[in-house]
Image 1 (cartoon, one colour):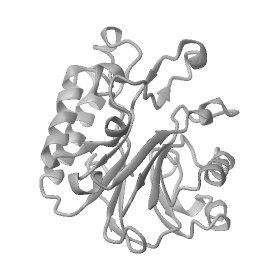
Image 2: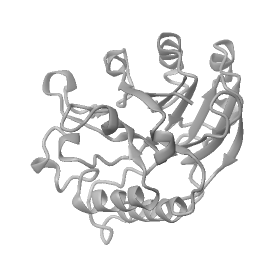
Image 3: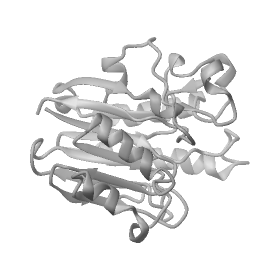
Image 4: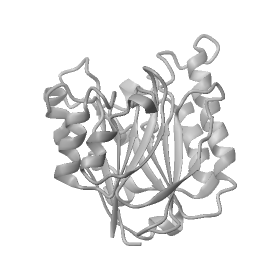
Length: 263
C-alpha cells in the first residue's frame, strides 16, 4: 500500500512549518505540491530531507506558480510539459521506481483563469482553456497507469460548490470550463478519485477564499483533484481530505488530499 498526497501550498517557503506538520501527522509516501512560488535553488530541501523525503523533483520559478514532488519512494524525472505554452512552471511528472514501480505521477497546476469568463476580454481565461486543450491532446496518447493530481482550478459538479446557481458565471464553475474539463476526462477515461471514494453529492471541498469567513459560511469549492487511469483507479483503496490544515495559523487557502493505492 502506498499513499499519495497533493496540496496547493501557496508558498512552500512561507509554510514550510505547516508542510512539516502535515508530513509528520499524515506521513504520505509521496507529496505533490503546487504554487510553491520559488525557484529550485531556494526550495526548503532541508525540511524534506530530515523527514526522509529524500527524492525530490522541482519545477519552480521565482515568485509565482511552480510545482514540486517529494517522496520517500525512489523515482525518476519523467516529464515536464509546458501546457501553458509560455514557459511557466506548472507541471512535473515522475515515474515511481520502488513500491508502486512503474506508476506515473503527474503533478499539475492549471491556471486560475482570471475573473471574467470570456476569452475576448480576459486573455487569462483563454489561456486556461488552451492549457486544458493541450492536456487533452496529451491524455489521448497515454499508455501507462497514471495518476494526475493537483490544483485543477475547476469545480466540475453542481455539488462541488457551495451554491451552484450563484457560481455558474464565476470562473472555476462555468459550463464552458466544466465541458472542457470533461473532454480531458474522456480523452483517457480518467476516474475522479474524489468522487469514486466520496460519492456525489457528499461535501468534498478543497478550497475556501481568504475573503470569506470560511468556517462560518462554508463557502467552499472542490478545485483540487486526484484522477487515475482506469487500471490505477481499480487499485485505489481510499481517498480523503485533511480539512484541519485550513484552520492552522496563516494557512494555504487549499487543503491536502490523500489517496491510498494497493499496488
